[in-house]
Image 1 (spheres, helix red, strand yellow):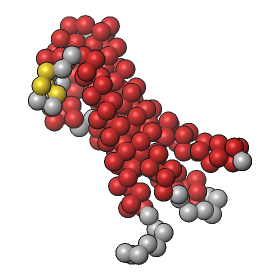
Image 2 (image 1 turned 135 degrees about the horizontal axis):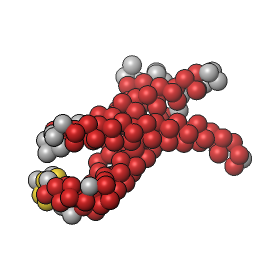
Image 3 (image 1 turned 90 degrees about the vertical axis):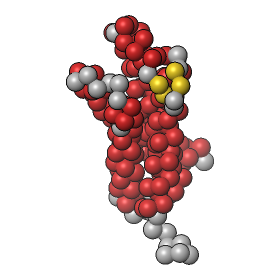
Image 4 (image 1 turned 180 degrees about the vertical axis):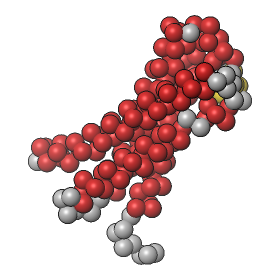
Length: 160
């Protein structure tokens, strides 16, 4: 019984991690680009990096749907929700680790700039900035997964 549970979770975990890493790479490249053009102080541009998580969740859920359609099965709802959460968590943890690495090792003078920037209307220490990145990314991923699974639901519920 345990092997069937583990097998059914494997595609979800594999897809979630793959697209979480993809979103992290995109966010890191985006961060480097906005720093190169001197726009790192723009809150809207910093916040826009979360769009990469949303895009990765869309691609991950499509990949999950294809894997279930190839086996002639309907995509279950909970694995779709799990993928959104996992993509957001993995992507934001890797991105936050990069921000920490960047702020402490690559550009220590930039760490002061990161701390001086306001997040949620207040100044935060670097570790709190990292924690807020992880929290926000996880929430964005989970909510994106929730909304997309509602949109992709074709179970023929009462209101359809």
